[in-house]
Each structure stands twice: as C-alpha cells, then as structure tokens.
Length: 588
Image (cartoon, rainbow, N blue to C red; front, side):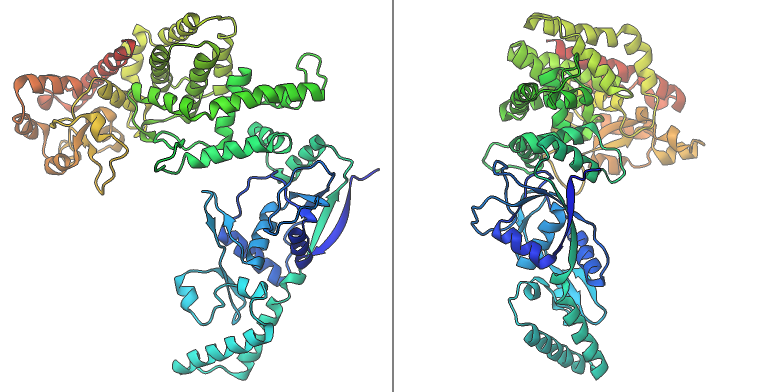
C-alpha cells in the first residue's frame, strides 16, 4: 500500500518561525475566521497541561499554488507547504504568540487577549476585572512574544503580588512563591509543545486535496452538499468564495455612505446564496447535481474532464456575479416591499425568499422581463409561496419542478404567464374560502397566514386599529424603541376570557383574537372587555372611518357582543377576505 503522506513533528515555535519566513503558506481553503476567544483559551489550557490538541494537515507545494500567509513580514518566496487543515488553530496561536490582530466574523480586526493565573494555572479570556486583578497575567502575548525578559518578569510579578497580598493581610508564603515561579516557568515551555503534522505529497492534484479536506473536516458528521461546493470553490476559485463570504457579512452591517448588501429581510449565509447562483446558472435546486458538474462530470456519460470543469465553473462564475450584483439584490428587496412585507420579522421561510430571488434573476437576465412587470409578478410569487408554504416539506423537489417549467419558455411574456399559471393553480376559490380560514385557526405566533394578513394591511394602506398611523409605518424595522411601535392586542382580553371560563392558552391566543394597536392603547385597554372599550375608542373617528377600520381589521359587525367561538369563526373568514383583497392589489 502506497501512502500519500508522511508524518512530521513540529514544535509550536518552529511552526511560527516557518510561517513568518514563508516556508509554510496558508491557502484560503477554510473560512477565514478565527475561533472564539474561549476556544483559543481552551487550546492554550490543553497545551499547558500537555494534552493532545489534534494533528495538522499540510500539502507539499508546487510553484503555481496561490497562497497567503498569516504572518505580516513581506516574504516573497514560494511556500514549501500549504496548510490544508488546522488553519484556525495556527491563526489563533500565531496571533497570540506574536501579539497580532486577527479578523473576526464581521471582518473587523481585534486582538485576542488571553490571561493566565499562575496561582492555579488557570487560563481565562481577559476582561476589565481580570486586567485589574494582580493574581493574573492579563495578556500572555507579552510573555510569549519576548517583549519582557523571562526572569525579570517572574520576579516583578511575584513582587507586585506580594505587595497586594500584604495590603490585604494575606502574605505569600515561600512555598506559594516557589509554586508561582514553577507555573510561570512551565508556561514558558508552551513554545516547545509538539504538533503532529501529516504532509500530503506534492503529486496530489487539487481535486484529491479537496476530497481529503472534506473527509478530514467532516469529523464523523454528514456534510451538506453546499459544503462540498464551497470546498470546490476554495480549491478552484478561492476569490469567488471570498466574494461570497464578504457579501454575506456585509449584509449584516448597516452601511453609512457606500453601497452595501445590508437589508432588513435576511442576513444570508454563503450556502444560501450559493443556492441562488446554482439555481440561476444551472436551473437546479438539488446541489448534488451541481457538485458533479463543477468537478467536470458529464451527467450523461459519467466521465470527468478538466475542460468541462473549467466550462461549468465559467457558468457558475457568471451566475454568482449576477447574484451578488448590488443593483440586482436591492431591486429584488424592493419586490418584497411591493408584496407588503416589511422585515425579517414577517419572513417565515428564508427558502421562499431565496427561491424567489432565483426567479427574479432568471426573469431579469434570461428573459429580459420589463422591470416594472418583473417586480409585480415576483411580488405575487413571493406572496403566494409564503402564504401557501410552497417550499415546506420537500423544497428541492418542488423547486426542481418549478425550474423545469421554465426550460421550454422562450420570452418574457411566457415567463410571466408561467408564473401566473402556477400562482392561480395554488390560489383557487377553495383556497381562499376554505383552506385559508382553516389555516388561520391557529395560535402559532409565526404563522405564514398571519404575516400575509399583515402584508395585506400594508398593501391596502390600512391604519392601525384606533389610530391614524399606517400599519406599514409602524412596522418599519428602522423604528427602534424600548416599546414596539405597534403591539398585538387581544380583542377579547385574557382576563376577560378567564372570567367567562376560557383559560386554554391555545384558545386564548388564537391569531384571530389579535389586532394591531399602538402600544399605549394596548396598555390602556388592558383587561377591559370589548363591549366596553370598543365604543370608547371608536369615538375618536367618524362612522365612515370606523367602517373602514372594521374592514381592515376584519371585525365582524357587533363583534363586541358575540360569544368568543362565534367571533373567532367569523373573523377568520373576514381575515381571509382581507388577505385576498390585499393580494389583488398586486395585479395592478
């Protein structure tokens, strides 16, 4: 049996030295984010105690490998080996030993401050209290980087601790001093800690290294298909993976003046936007097909070729560029607003959002649908798939079917006609009159039908109950206060229902028992029954205004006099009608 690796032992100091010199390179095969500080702390604790911390996997380099280094010295030599597995550990160790900043998951630079208490050899993540505690060495980087002399540091530390203890009438004994010196001396041995490294042969090609990387990182767990594709990107198109990750993280950060993917609907992960690029480029929802394509496999002949891999990556690169285009991204976000949705609080399925983005991009790029018409049809599409939970259960299978219907169409008119046909097939008379009222018979706080109702109120430009403020205005995610601008109010309050013998939580919290009111009205109404509070608050408005408000908020005539079960049944029908009326606004 021929092995494709050799086993080598490095000391920690030797690893750091060769990273500094450029002998060891660091390719972007893994996500470029360091561990949490607590994980770095635990790593140092294990090394101090002499515990094993796992092996590293290197790959003997050839001259055409593009790499980056952890170190900051301007070494231009070609690395002898590349780090395939162990990047997180080595980045963390290098940062602490050299006192360097690292990039966090928000792409902001920061230092990793790990503290050490010699008295009991305890490692901690440094904080303000620890930094003020003379029992701790607040930043071990000072010791490991050689910024202070070893013997002098030990003497100074013990002297400072002795004075602190004397001030508290708790003098250090000679035994305790010796123990502290021993612990500090042992700490200085950390750079000698031995690492087992498996070095892969330079004869291995990129794909074999990619395969080994996936196997090593699976750690006994089943990886998602997206993980395989992201790994292929790391090996064959690392710049593309970096662009994808930067986009996702910038989407989490509010922008000031520069164009940014930030939005109030979704904070996407790379694997999610990967699905969008795959759907656009290959018209596929099942990622296993695309993984094979990106490896250069012909799905008919089952043969692999480098030419085919390059060709398929070319298709994928174009699709990702279109997916990450900020103009396309924000034009799509506008379709969600057009559909009546205002923020991620109203989104019950991110899959529905992502699959709608695929349809938007296909319509825009492949069929050149007019922007105005595209926004309307995708708004209708998103409203429908959100309301019907179209992609719940077997999302990939259903999406494959939806994409399949597009393969024979040739122009923008057929694209719109196909989507409208699917929409109309779902939203039948039976759906509006039977299925939807039954869907509203729930106490689930995040029901798709409830958020479709809120979206309809936005589309109908409805006011909040007992208010002259629009629902859309008070559901604006930019409004941040201690109290939410608008709250869900029990039309039949809990205490009132309790008095008449209705205490079951699911029955009390039926979504048909909730209406949107401003927070101060919700507080004032409190436990008052509807027979008393409704007329009082209705006096704020004219008869025509109250009539319109009762329509928007699906309040049956004389609802305040109804028994509770009848009220719920009648209001569900009216809520379904409001949802339908709101959806009809998207036809214009």
